[in-house]
Image (cartoon, rainbow, N blue to C red):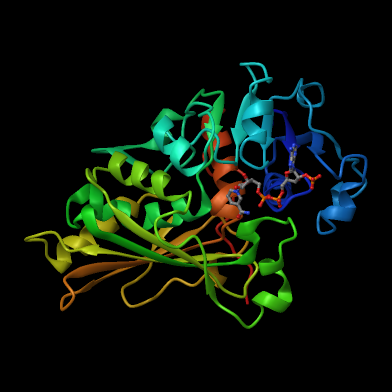
Length: 350
Ligand SMILES: NC(=O)c1ccc[n+]([C@@H]2O[C@H](COP(=O)([O-])OP(=O)(O)OC[C@H]3O[C@@H](n4cnc5c(N)ncnc54)[C@H](OP(=O)(O)O)[C@@H]3O)[C@@H](O)[C@H]2O)c1
């Protein structure tokens, strides 16, 4: 027998909101309640999300506490700042899942430095695979919670790439370098000149260069939780002409005395039992294409002996494992359901 879980989605006209609706549609117990947004309120969802055919006639409502009231779960897919404002008006018994940044950071100083303004507080973190200690994972902390902060998409890719080595002590976390290839949907739907097809098709370009990207403190927070005291990272995302996907290339010095076998073993042990994170067979490299539409993270690790560095490649779909899939995975854990319910590792290819 199935239970019925009423889910409201705020930001339903956006990329994340649309993906939440697509991914959550596959969950056997989910029934959608209010779908809300901002400038598109009053319009049918089908104008903004034509791929969600069964929901095309649903009318988008204003994002108000009244419209979001009375649901078991509210998923917020709003710009940062907007989500903490509405979340503060929702009752404590509602499970609120925020796909934005407002409640991810534990440091108010880091919030002020990278986002500005007042820190809205810290919620339980929605990365179930995060290593939180010897033999413990973040999933152990999510049962019964009523507030979940879904990680940033780049943060998920870099954390899943490097945390096994940090936790096992086979890499030096003080000199991490991450360069990412990012699809355009990571920037959201709002119109900006540099995101036009005429600018982006045929071009690869860097952004957020020089230690300023907002995902940096969240990556450091995660790698420190995983055991990497004193983590320092140089992080550079690049836009490449694809609509979805993140390919993260992450490297760190091999720790003194660590062998290539110990490196491989660390990654194998960390992900042997994970349903959504797959260490590929040696010599096979992750591609974003193999993760599209799936809640999958693909990982490969190698040791560059001459450079003295461990190199990890991770691929995810930014909108699935990077957001909507993580939200559903975390919802399952919070509600005491099997973690994998409604989630697929089967992608769309070619
Ligand atoms: N894109 C990704 O890959 C990704 C991954 C992880 C996390 N995130 C985070 O998820 C959130 C949503 O990102 P997105 O890419 O979906 O952005 P988006 O495509 O620009 O969508 C933004 C949504 O928020 C609504 N909105 C804007 N201002 C609002 C306000 N003041 N009050 C209520 N609703 C408002 C918009 O409604 P209207 O269209 O009706 O104006 C739209 O539905 C962001 O916090 C982002 O950082 C994004």
